[in-house]
Length: 374
Image (cartoon, rainbow, N blue to C red):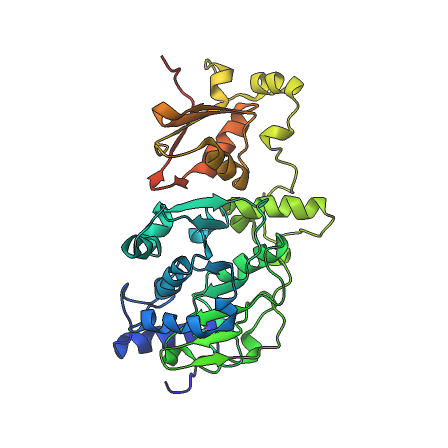
């Protein structure tokens, strides 16, 4: 590919996307604009990771859910490695662990490696889990031989890495690999790089493997001054990490925004933080549901649980999302659970955080308690 003329990250992205489409290098899903682009030959390129010592010696591998990395996810499963995949846009946590069914055939493993399989054959991993990632595989829109990387512009790969540093899951020496088409390897001006940008140690293309020898330091944690209130609202696990770092005495001041109403960590109390002696009073004085049983108003119904679901899996998801109830009533035969909170405000907050949650192949139905079981 000819030298790029773009002087911004977005300019480079646009040129890469346009080139891949106009030269018919792109593969499904198309068009590749605004995506980590899949390319013809991506599956074969993925096979080269087997030749890297950093892959052979790993036990836990974090691989992004992008289509061009599907081959790496399959190799990790076939090699019986622990495969961690970030949740889409971090809406329901940081990682999901892919758990193929016992005795899974190669065809089943292949399904597990797809985006649908990631949803259907996974369990959430909580912040308190003992995770130590040996290798990170990320998608890229553009990358330089020096190891400098440009993603699709949403910042999730950079944020995921910073969050992993904060939870102790990675360290400075954890290798980072990206898999791209040859045309995506370009010169990137150093002036475009920022402190939060993730760099890569190995680049794999259909024709070569590049050890970048990148000396630029990787992010050392979350840079809270670059996190907006909107991001904090959309990413529950980020809120949990912020509260944790606040308790550790770190500066967690967010990006300055006009008219921001984002609360400081700790000002919204989690249900388990509210003393039992005050729960009844809070429910009576602050419940907006006039004429509704306040005990009922403080419950959340979780339905459509898989037949194979276990209460510990739901508890792990609730902990990951910062929605731990005072009490959980498990109704497995009815494929549901009732979550009991201190007051209606806590129940509403929990219901909001649980929207879109998956367990196994099922999307759970979540609603505030509105009627008694008969």
